[in-house]
Length: 206
Image 1 (spheres, one colour):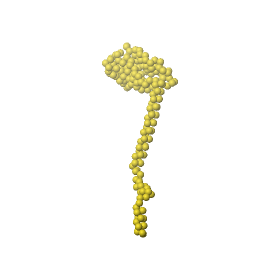
Image 2 (cartoon, rainbow, N blue to C red):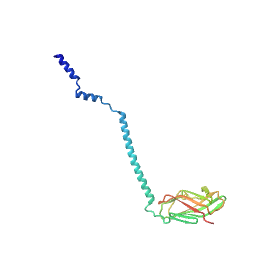
Image 3 (spheres, rainbow, N blue to C red):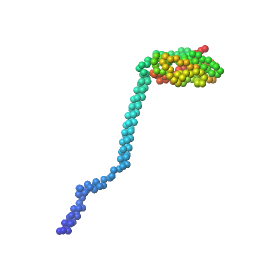
Image 4 (cartoon, helix red, strand yellow):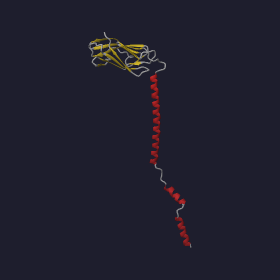
């Protein structure tokens, strides 16, 4: 009887009890994967960075659109140009900005052009001359010699205020004969309402 009782106890210990099975499962549970945690954190940072980038991009687009509209509309305190385009001999007016060839002459092998610019607007911000060159009847281009002539600091590459006249003497080397078919090109003039435009003024007859 004692032996039978011992065998029963042994068999009882060998039986898989629910509590024992649960403990075994807990003990077998895998430890936390550090690499997986890092990957998850990295993924989260990428999502956050992308969201911030998209928000900043949208804000930049909105700012650019508003800036463009302000440029196109102009300052509400300024007035729209009264003279969009007027062309006369030796003179051209675009958006109230007049460029006029007052005189021209040759000394040696240099053509000197006396140029007058008049910002005729009442309060339109400014006009800026950024580049200038001369084209003869054969299509050859001549750039100004800034070492000759007289170019005021507020004329070439600077601003010309409203209701202001500025004179400049522009020199072009390599020209020995006067030709009234030559054309003076004045590029990249701008004001508060318009981006840029160009002038094409043919030398007046003498």
